[in-house]
Amino acid sequence: MGVLSGCARDARVADPVEIPDEPVSGGELVVAIQSDGRTLDPHRATDAASMRLIENLYGTLMRYTEAYGEVEPYLAESVDLSDDQMTYTFRLRDDVRFHRSRRPMTSADVRYSIERIMDEQVRADQFRHIASMEMPDAQTLVIRLERPVAPFLTYLAYPMNAVVDREVVEANEGALDQAAGGTGPFTLVEWRKDRHLIMERHPAYHVDGLPRLDRVMFRPISDETARTTALRNREVDLMLDVPDKDRTILERTGHVMIESVPGTFWEYIGLNAEASPFDDPLVRQAVAWAVDRQMINQIVKLGRATVTDGEFFPPNHWAHTGQSLYPKRDLDKARRLLQEAGHAEGFSTSMRVGTAFPYQVAAAQIVKQQLIEVGIDMELVSEESGVFFDALNRGDFSMTLVGWLGFVDPDEWLYNIFHSDGPWNQQNYSNPDVDALLEKGREESDPKQRIAIYREAQRRILTDAPIVLLYVNEQTSARLHRVQGYRVHPTATTLSLRETWVVP
Image (cartoon, rainbow, N blue to C red; front, side, top):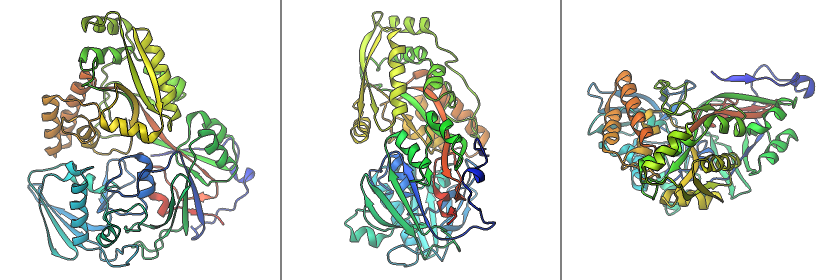
């Protein structure tokens, strides 16, 4: 459950807005985001900024519930699973309409969308065990798998595994950056890169009375202080991510409300397992022992993050076990490992970090100082997001400091990043034993067995140390008091914008 953090004084006194007993429709919401997206194509998006823009434009067969880790039908009306866990029969809603054409969504559209996801390769691995897709009628889709895939329904709830309008895709030669090709609560009006994205209510949305807002504008404001100031000055209505350093300021602002929930945004130091000297696991382990996670948390996160050193899943996840592998900083052990690896005198290296995330730059600066104590001289290279992520995806780095968010199933946390063939295995990590565990975890349906499998997989991964875990963050947003109905979700999804309303 989310924890509502009240204001320092009564918001009604500081900002005398009369809140109606019932939601009202109409109005515009201005949302401040820290960086603009790179694409509006759900099947090509890999960055969080793009996903936040896209998810309200499109719909998925399943969707996340308010209970973290659970999913339910969305564009599907129902789903039946066979006893052998390999055949899914989806009955589709008959009232879903696409934005541009207003034509009804059919099983052919869903099949086309899944095939396009596989063709685009970004999340193709999630669907590679599909043996066939059959369409008995326009509202029924039967998906048969080659073998059980435990997180399959969770994949179908991932906002980027969306259903798209084939006619719009083809009319725009495969590009969706300026096209209204979805079924979501809002439809695209205009995207002016680095200035704003404007979306408006989809009049044929399949949920009666939703969305309540007429219009939503996303405004990229890269500077943290500028975002906070914009909210305090009522230039924006909602700020999706509250910088830890500005939380106290906002708590003292009477017309601003802050809401936090345990989040899924985890941050780490990535080590390229194919680049010398990090191709030696002893060197990677030395870094893991040399880093003082608690200190970084206190300085950069003001102690608000949850330090993690032995597992990826946050405390609110059903697979969390509390495993610890690097309980506290141990410089002597780090030095012994470096000596054993042939680096008794230390070595020089570099770390790439994205400037769009000032808190990660700050953390990297502390890591630099901490590694000096064991003889590792690290050059810090700060780069604009596009350059940074392109290099990361190419594996063109020795060290990095970065994060992921939005994962739900354990498979999403581990397979894509640490399997030898994982599509986001930026660290170039490979361990056949880990591969076997992750493949077993993907097939196992018993939650207790899955917990045991993933506990062991995490132990092996973090012992090999292709990454050094730091912490998992709260998900915190701030809004003007006049904004009602918005709910903060652990995955950082903004899908509750469809229920959001504003007091005139």
